[in-house]
Length: 316
Image (cartoon, rainbow, N blue to C red; front, side, top):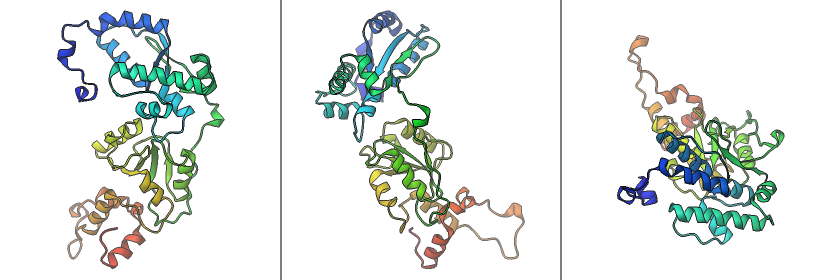
């Protein structure tokens, strides 16, 4: 999989110095010039892991992340490096090639500095209200946006009086990727419909809405931490429905029809086909255990199910 991404094969590095042998040069370079990367958190994590594998001390240096800066300064549906380069007029052709990615990140930083009329990296970070990251042998700090605590957006309270038949009622919803509406507005929209809006994917999450131009339903196909977390939980059997922005936009503005939901469809079919107890009753130990979905039956809108099944409609 790695070779398919970056094109570096074992034969390309055979006989060359190992990471630990070149680490000193990397540390000297990073201590001399500003270190900049796009999605620097990934690169710093890779450096720390490589140091651990080489049994070497993690070098100390400051770094900035153009992904953090782009999210702060641009309004794009996706802040991946190719999209940011296109927005800023930076020539970029070989994504995941190490040299091209490094060159692209550097040029993005220069272009953002020009937009902000900043004469240095420090001035650019100050105007964007972004703090430099720092890596060290024991402790390290990510490059991050500086916010006062009271300025941090908080998901709104759920509307307990919402219509129980709408597709978001009772769901625990997380958003990822750039949306056509601000994130607080998206939170408010689902909260008004009776959902619980969450910042991050947890064991309680039941729905992930992916923006950024995403059109599928597989979180593995979208490169964000929340999508990865959702994919990992789904691999473990956790039921998380994935919506793209078009589906979210249509379903969150109308409560007349439930959102297409393979998880919910499977659940109602299981409930509908649940075997009845034998005539005369049966011992509790002999009664089949109800599916997990039916034990949370309130999530599936009993009035809606009864009205649909009474009409023979088995496709909600």
